[in-house]
Image (cartoon, rainbow, N blue to C red):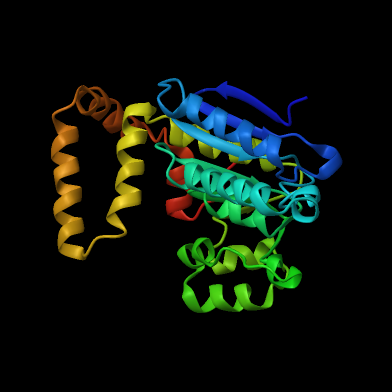
Length: 265
């Protein structure tokens, strides 16, 4: 029995965690299924963005209890390596990733979401670095990258629960949506990202991963070289006329509404 539902819709690869009995806790099987799906989509031109989601009630309850309580020694080492591979695979995935979080996302559940490029949360979502409450280490790096070092250390040291609005204020999530609308809104955002196509998605994800680790001079030079490279590609000549037309006609309605401070439908 599998614990992951996969689909490709309008350029979006959807990874839906589906283990209701354990509230999508990540055990051996789900780790493996996620890794297999990501590998399959890495070079698939039909996929330009990946959406990682549970359901409207919960995202992921963290590590499966049978892993926490039932293994030791060599099996513990193997599972630790498996978890490392999964979080690395999500963070380094060649195309943009979106996490859609509902319900309580404790510990490793929050950490997996933090590996994604964008996180959208339902109003019923809550987060915590709960590992500290259990005598374990959380994942400080993922927190710090999104909320900054001082705030990350407070959350990391206390392990306290905080809600979706606080997560948005801190910068852990990009958007908070009403309960029951998470999948629709998160998929729409992933679809808008996927409109660029797989080729552009790979280029821009590489820029996002590399440029943040460069000094400002190296970063400027690198990004200008990427721009130069793109202008030599067919995708530039194909997209430029359409991009100008969309701007003239106001077809990028959602982005335009946001920029002007108008409510979007």
